[in-house]
Image (cartoon, rainbow over all chains, first blue to last red; front, side, top):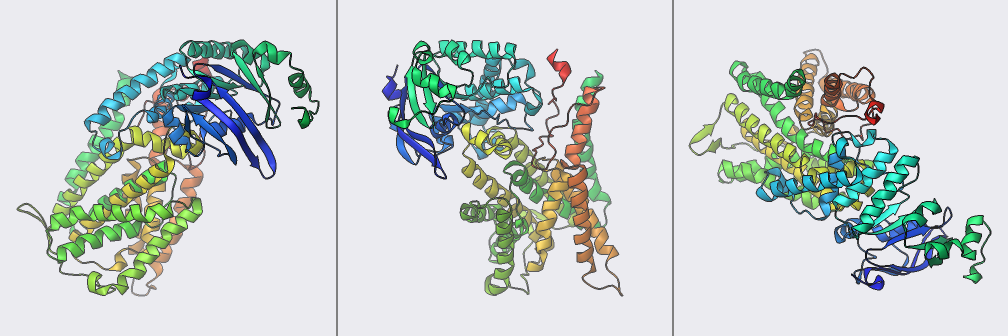
Length: 262
Length: 359
């Protein structure tokens, strides 16, 4: 198992949008197999930080390493192939495609057959297509969507669309899964299903970072929690430590925090 | 059992269409055979363009130029003593290489800017041909193109070409279908639905766009190659801007992103174009009338299709077929109300989620 500093390490990551510092000199590391919670008030920079890790945004400065190699300038597709997968807060499903097809797209990270092989259904194409289908069915079973494989993805209710996003990510066999508010908008029973899914994935040693608005939800599954406020890390520790941290309490109560304090 | 019969309707339909296609050339007059061959050639171009528009989400207004480049490649090689068959095979390859090279800078443009960029390819093509008379025959044209031979078999009559074209149509549609149903095709469809979602799953969006553009060039190139042997004479007048626009309309009418829509769109627009040309040509009528009539009618068709059946004829039929098949008393919610929605109508197994499924 890679040490925290070898698996994912961010140093001084900074990104601004038109003068607003969304992520400001963030440094943190995540160990392999860990389930890390990432919390913070609205606009704290959590999603921006995720997009910096997934490659959908590039940092203005700072570095990001994954398994010891720098990745801050790699494209999202290249990072996905290295094993970094993201599920978005606003569900990005592929409309017009079935649930199964959506999940099968996830297998792009570990399959190789290209256009000419696909055009003539050459052996590697046929072989890979079989394993993609098997893997996709496995991923659908993991999230409990195997009975919905032929439905058009966009016609599923929100809870199942979120599960579908996770299945699609799982089909890519990620090493690091970034979950951006997977529980938002879910009903009570759907939240419980999600919770047990996250526990199951954690038992399978999948490294995850979980952004969640609902602090109770995060504290139930995460071993350690990192707290962001106004683009900066203001605390990191076990759920208990975080609950009793005065800076965190003050951030969540809406009291302005002086940056000199940090 | 009834359900199974319903499921088989599309395959019955394809077999019927196939048989009619095979039998038709035996009964058509020579001028009608020409229209028939043209429908086949346009189906090939439109299948390629549909892959580009429906899957990579890009509009190309320069497809007639690629059609022309394929035609000129085959003609120039054949005139210079190459075997006509080799010249024909070289047509899609040369066109694909050119599309690839043009695509590298061009595909940095997006949306309307890309459409105008492709229109520029068409205009440049039309400007270059008259200036390169020594090679291309210029405005006067290129004649003396030898007949096409495959082994000892000479393809000469309209009927021969009708069969040749439709063999290539079938191969093109099979290839397009194979691509859409496997990894690259799923990547393309994902990309058309959500670029960030696709890139997050490892789809290399820019590379895929370039490959799709190259493939659509190859499709236009082979069609152009067959065209030139069929006509036996080549001039730039055969590749006007309006032909590029017709290709786009054929894609929209048939159904963006549907492989079988290519044939429906190509057939319908080719026939309409012929009818308008006949109506607009007469001793007392101005010579521009057919073009003006066509432009007006195409605009009308575009508006009607995009307003009423944005998924095109095949898309609409497939939706109707799915509804009949599920025999649901409550209409499921219709998702996707714009041309951006990619329809994969060749898969009739997909369902729409309704409240009843929750229970």
